[in-house]
Image (cartoon, rainbow, N blue to C red; front, side):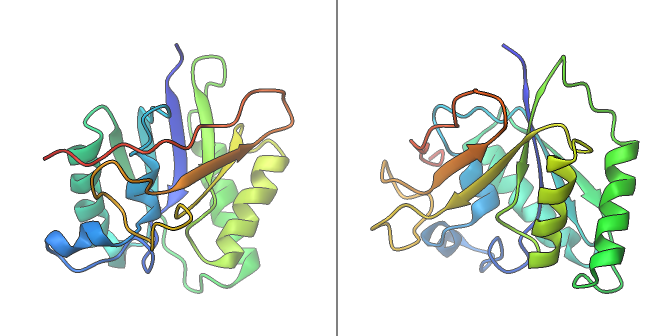
Length: 179
């Protein structure tokens, strides 16, 4: 089985929470992504600005607690204006050109749930143009969950991947956090 590598932005709003146990009562897309029983994330390339290093570290620790097999690789990507299409597209294109992709050895998913709308659009465009050689992945809280992430065996989120190839989409059964 080939490893699965997910590339996505740290959500400075959606992934943020109070630093304490109450963080498990809120849906956080980057953490929730790694809690699916039948979607193994071997590596998560976590794009974030230098001003969010503390949050990135905290999210990486939470991911380690619910998915110890996931290796989180923080990658700093600073923008003067994260709503400037030209700047965001250019820096993401530079990232894509420099990243050592090996589509024959790994499956890539591009998580477009977090980041500014501009960043999400740029990730979409770069994936569609095959600069990012993967499938698009979008997550959302499970219906009726009230946005809760982590508690027991309840559904925490749903995943949906799209691709031009006929591969199956990632499943939706989440994993509970480690005790």
